[in-house]
Image 1 (cartoon, helix red, strand yellow):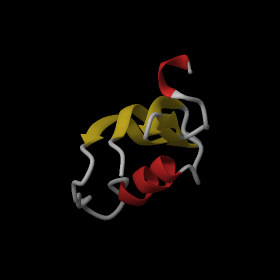
Image 2 (spheres, one colour; image 1 turned 90 degrees about the vertical axis):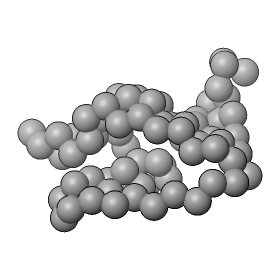
Image 3 (tube, helix red, strand yellow; image 1 turned 30 degrees about the vertical axis):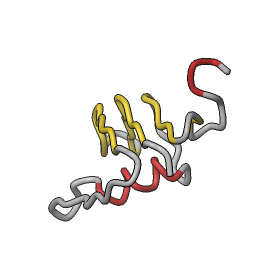
Length: 75
């Protein structure tokens, strides 16, 4: 399993900003829980990280590959 990195993630639903500059790093082998109130952006975050939701800015990478399929460090 590879490290997951999220850097400056921004997601908008029309005029509503659902995620605003979310950054996190999950080391390989870690177990993480995402907690928050209703409407806090938990599902939006997981959809963006999994690649099923398009985000407007930021980067999501795991195992040296970004969500859009490009290699980290331009390789």
